[in-house]
Amino acid sequence: MRILVLLSILLCLASCKGKKKNPMDLLLQPEECVAELFFSTTDGDILGLRLGDPSVKLAEHRIGFPLVETPVETIDSIPMCGQSNAYFEFSIRLLNGEISEMDLLAFSNNPEFLNEIMESFRKQITLKKGEAHSDAGIFSWINSETGLEIYLSDESIRYGKPCIRLLFTSGSGFAV
Image (cartoon, rainbow, N blue to C red; front, side, top):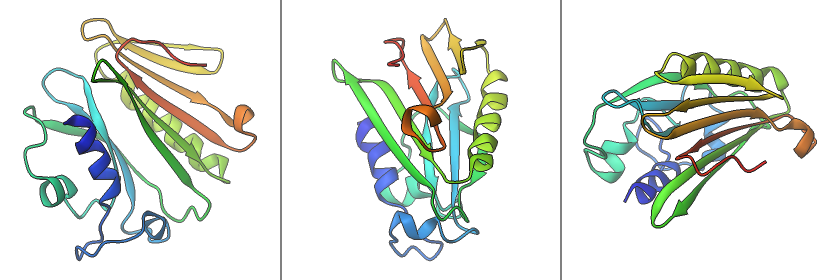
């Protein structure tokens, strides 16, 4: 169910007027396009990532409400538009029918844009209950109570262009 919800959110981006739009169109309209990272307010586990128009409550209008039983808190919101060459890849890995990893790759020809995202996520993640470390260009955060792990890394060398990777895992490890 969670997989369907996350994929539906990503696929059903809409404008303020409710018209369906191509996700690439959203990158060209600065007033309509953000990325939001959100947590559960009760247990601290990450519930997901929203990409799209902040003025449209996609979850309520597109999928049905509530998506989850616990209240959520948006911990950060980052404008993604005006980046004509920005590209995002989102993937989910399953283990025994459960989500074990959620992976986001963000590419842009503007390294400052990616640095802003990286620093913002790093600051917000360290505010949550858990242990943060930085080693060999990889920032990691681990909540030993829930088993949740977050890895944030600059992948520019690997891909040959400015790129960052944000990985949420249930403890199954970080694929280097």
